[in-house]
Image (cartoon, rainbow, N blue to C red; front, side, top):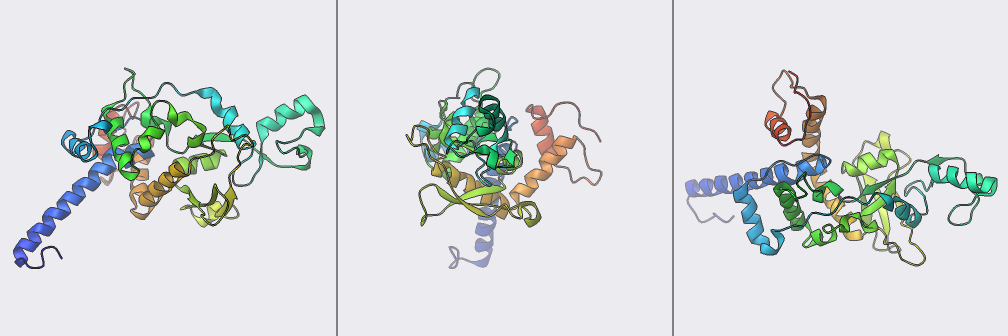
Length: 302
């Protein structure tokens, strides 16, 4: 131990001081990264100015000024679907909306992107686009500025993967490499950091084992599963970036293994219900902070 040669009292003081610092650091990460990331459609709470400056000094001044991205480009969905051949990544079911459009134009001889008859299939899925890292990380406030809390979240994200913010800022977050095509359920589970992609080095490039921390009864017959992502022949549309999927997987594991994810879900559940439990277990400090920061609308009911 670092204090092995010290007196017992000094060792206890050193251990207590170290534990306090670690606890403060963990709380800072929780308040300014994990909580807002899980509630990524809402505004994040304000960081501690002192601790924020410490992290900035550790990484250099170049990361202290972030540029918010412009408004999300809404018409890129078609490009993502073309890349993924209009199919769900897990079951490979074809996009239901696209089937309807193609049948209206081509009748029963309509084919999929691989020139196979769609009439040979009997199940289709409504597909959605989801960001690997949420767009809200760099969305601007009402003054078209990137808030200090967003800067803090990006600074912490940069701890996990140095310079990853370069892949997100200046509208880079909207690029195909930060998206996958999923169904409604997987959209919810992936966005909530309960489903993850683990790269398989021994397989073809862009091959992943898709797994989750969901109950077995929820994913029975679906996960885990190994899939190789589709690529366009001309490579003109980027596939999901392994670096971003790896970062998403790391965050998913931290939230699960530390039980932080379950704790945050409890807080967000209280927020959604807008109630305070009679036993005093509601995290009022978070609820009030998020309310003042614009996370909640309406009143909190006792």
